[in-house]
Image (cartoon, rainbow, N blue to C red; front, side, top):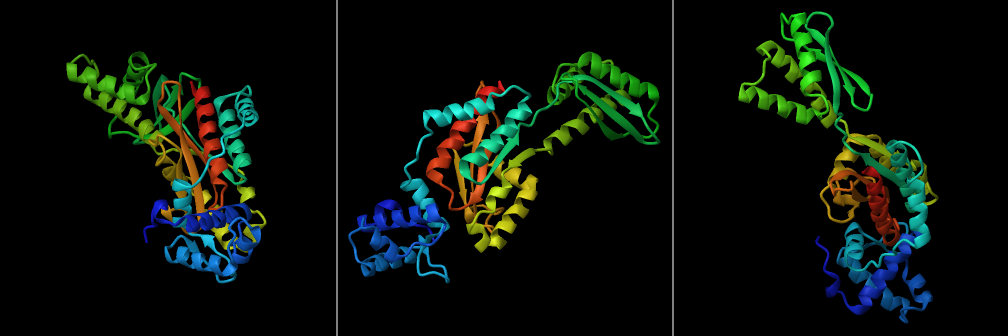
Length: 347
């Protein structure tokens, strides 16, 4: 059922709905009519409040758990609150300075990414996630060495000094001289380029007739570059910190949900695919409960934002995951600020 817009709710219904949602987000427990009446803010009797709660339940915005007389927001109710009623709490100057200090600690960029994930966990009281940029190495050298029959070893040396190996299937009858020619060509003509740039440069040479490679060596160069390009595209790297924070006091009453969430987090490829949906977003994305397939069963929420380099290019995504009762008003702007702060370090 599609939830109605906020404008279609009466003033009384909006006030009661807001108090139920805010009470649930603070405590994690359903909110009852007696609690709302005792608060005094509504100046209504418990019976009047129960009547409005029933109407909101009929609209699909609230639900009543079997074990409680109170109400809690549904996923649709939380979406309505987040999109139409929430008042965000911007980070204070002290909070901004603390985040920037932690990110600016000396060390490699990987250390900053680890720190970012930990910061997000601290901010949210849940788990923090950072999807590492897909970095294509720039070639310094690529050697293709013969192994046993039909197999070779592609040894890539990046311009940052990194060295990695990949097995390569060789065409039948490949001569050692062809391997050497392909290696020499890549090192001499394609060094300094990313894998994609190297492949395009080689294709341009061949198309223009400027390439001195014979067919066998050309095939080896293409195979050598392809095995790296395919591997890089399949390797999203995800850093997750703070899973233990998911095991809070309320989790003990819903241990199956938490176990399902932790199992979901183990499938980092699927989590990375979910975060990837936020890569083209102009602002922070919020996925609530059943709105996303991956975390629908665990009843969880994801708040994610892309982070960009100094030229404005999206290089990764960061976010938090936790129960749907996350403090959205505080966490959303903190995730956004952390994304912008990390982007300044990427260069």
